[in-house]
Length: 164
Image 1 (cartoon, rainbow, N blue to C red):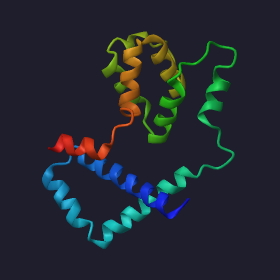
Image 2 (cartoon, rainbow, N blue to C red):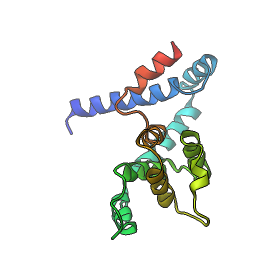
Image 3 (tube, rainbow, N blue to C red):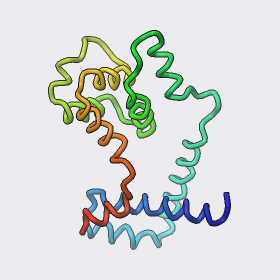
């Protein structure tokens, strides 16, 4: 990667992080306090530890099964999985969204969904698949936007717009 490309990548990453902070529910006073504390070495150490953890999460061991492989194995011989299934499942795994939180998201999007669940435990993958099969296209898209995020919006600009 060239120096110019690396600089562009860092700039985009910073915009995304700042956008996330700006679009969060932090008050203006809390944001100012956070900006001031960035000069403190303790918060830099925390940020450094988070960056190392993030980098380790991105470098997956070769033995780890990909979401696409897991989905293919789960639905072998069955109907084709919903086109959003792999993306939603991967993001749920990546964000470590628990089953109860996922069910809450699903119920927010489609209040009747919980009544359609079969008895017994379901894996997160099965739960997402059931939701996508039961729900309308617009409800599936709402869940996708809730978990994955609206497509291709600059979070820095979104955060500025919301705070403004």
